[in-house]
Image 1 (cartoon, rainbow, N blue to C red):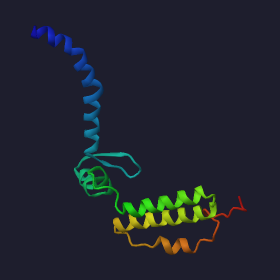
Image 2: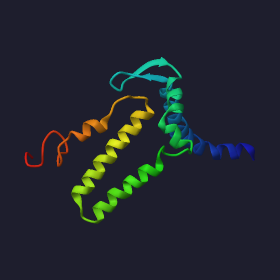
Image 3: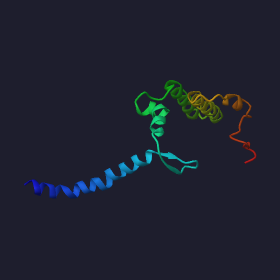
Image 4: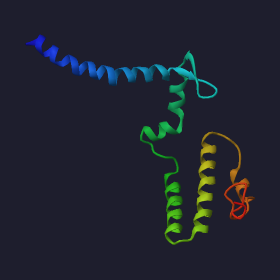
Length: 137
């Protein structure tokens, strides 16, 4: 009875090993290597990737502590949606621009980067989405 059970389980276990276990082992092996300059792989074994993942924003999200400043982000999203529902596209664009700048500043503060994107955004002329105005497009 035991031999028959093993023979019947062999195809299923082989399938699981081939399509589940083997890819997971390959991903784990690649996670131990260093990343290259332009997205390549440097085949030097290191645990730096796991250290970086444990201290990053991803760890906060995946370990259940949530998004930092969640209330601020939710209220900014609500303001954008409210402006869009009211049909006030200019106000929605301004609120969205402010939200993007605030999000980038929050990320910069979390990464200990000292730069002020708000100062740069305040000097941008109204109605621009980049280096060109709406009329130039």
